[in-house]
Image (cartoon, rainbow, N blue to C red; front, side, top):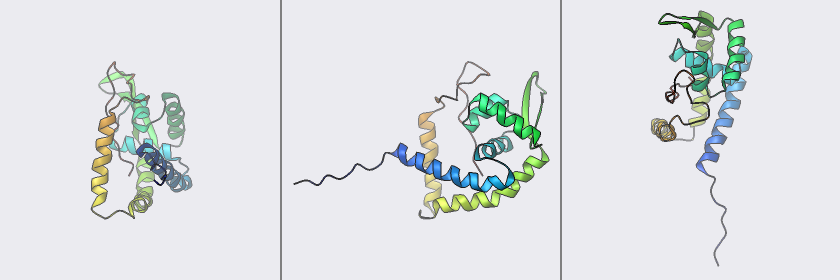
Length: 166
């Protein structure tokens, strides 16, 4: 007689569970600074890639263009980002962090590092780098063929989202 064991959860399910738990933790950490996890993510993307358009920031932050428009308005009002004309193409408006934006990220960085350490606590120390490499490989495998990856700046697919929430 064979025992009926439940199927293990799919990788997609496990990844979603990690995403939900990490986002809840990040929301908790960023709330005292008056930010959401999504706003924090957008700020970290701009920290690593200043001079993005709002459309490209939306793709790299995993939100819709409309959500990003609302977020940009809020971050501009708070003085955490600024919008300027692109010196190479005066028709385009690009975003970058202000000094206050850099300060907010610097203040949050130690707590975010603790959250990441909590996420990895049950892994052997040497596995963290391997996990990062495996997740990068998964991201490359999926490519940029997601709902939000289609570039409005060109007819080509946008670049791989290249940011690290840190």
